[in-house]
Length: 318
Image (cartoon, rainbow, N blue to C red; front, side, top):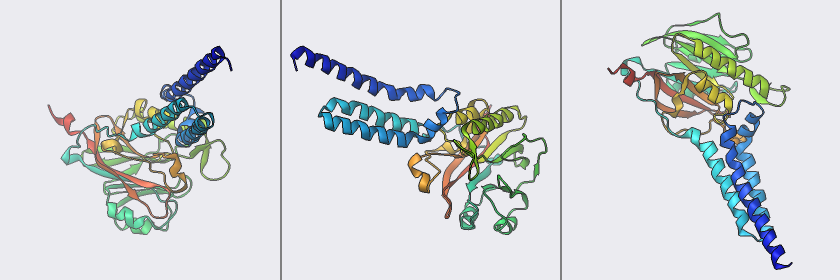
C-alpha cells in the first residue's frame, strides 16, 4: 500500500473510531423522546452494550489496532452511566416524625414463601402483586383493613389505617385506587401491577409496548389531577431508564421515594442481566422518603421495595 493510501486509510479508520465513540452518547438525548419503541432499547440496554463491546473488542483484536478500544470504553461508560444514574441517591428530605407511613411493595409471584419476609418488614401499608387467597389469612390477622383483587392484575392491599376503594378509578387501571386515612391526613394510594411490556400480548400478563406506554401515561395524568397526596406502589414493570418513568415524575408530579439512598435493580433471577428497577414507591412532591431499601422475596424474581413516606419535614418549617 502506498504512503498516501495508508494515510487515507488511517484517517478513515480514525473518523470511524470517533463516530462510533460518540454515537452511544445519543442514548441520553433519546431518553427524553416520547416514542414508545425506544423503551425496548432502554430495557435491553445492558445486554446490548455488552454485545456491542464484545464486537468492538473482536474488531480491535483482528485489526490489531488499539484505537478500536476507544469505542469499547465509550460504550462501557455510557452503559454504566445510563443504568446507574437512576440508582443514585436523590433524597428530597426527611419525613415529618408525626406523619410517617411505612410502605412495602412486593410481587410475590403467587407464592407463599415470601410471607415471612413481608411480615418481618412490618409495614403500615403492604401492597402485594400476584397475590393469592393462600396468604390472605396470614396478613388479615395482622392488618385490620384490606382490599383484595385476586383476578388479573392480582393486587392485595393491607393497611393499619382505614382505607376505602374509590369507584372513580381509571378504566382499565391495572390495580386499585384507594383513599387511606393516614396519620397526617388522607392520601390516595395507587396499588398497581402493570402488565409487562413487550412485542406481543401472547402468554403471561403482558401488554405491547404501545399499550404499556398508554397505561403509564394515563396513570401519570390521573395522579397529577389528585387533590390529596398520592402514593404509587407496586410492580409497574417500568424501568427507570424508560420515558414512562420520566412521565410519572414529570407529568405525574411524583418523587421516587426509594432514591432516599442508593438503590439497585429489583428484577432478579433470569431477568438479572437486564438490570431493571421496575418495582417502585413514588410519592407526591412535598412528600419525602426515609429508610428506603429492598427486601429479598424467596420464590419470587422480584425484590420488594420499602420506604417510610410522608410530608417533608422541611415543608413544615417556616
